[in-house]
Image (spheres, rainbow, N blue to C red):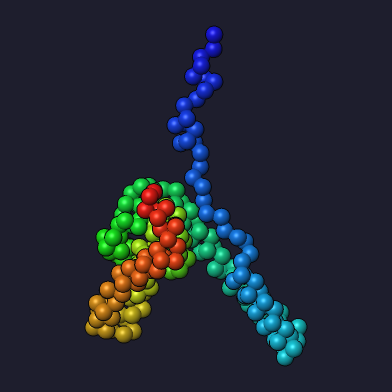
Length: 203
């Protein structure tokens, strides 16, 4: 007789082996269509004024620029993908989810302030946080904090150019803004998408 357990594996094992569903992104959206239309119009205007040589010169320069940016874009996207797999969904949801309250906004603000790197790092990380349970409010607080308080730009650019006094006062004045932006974002999100908000609260 064969072992029944070998024919009917435990459902828990199947559930653990199933990959978590990811967010499906459309390859072409309205923003892509609008940008492509603007590029076509701009290229036509340059061709009319400078001819084919002018268009080829711009195209060659931009392709070189794209080649330099592409590795950083790829690294940022990979970083976001790995973070979304590494971070525990339950802990992120408790710390940065819809029910995290003021604590979630403060954590998002602190994380954004210490997050190094440029937009190729910050936005993939923010997307990964949304994917693993952070709500709009905490993620908005993180992005606004990275923009206004991020220490990298302050140390590398602002202090040498604007001076220490200006930088410190600018940071102090900016401190409440990420929390306020996150709270407003959370309030607006719940009002615009009440069903999604209730589903997140239930989860």
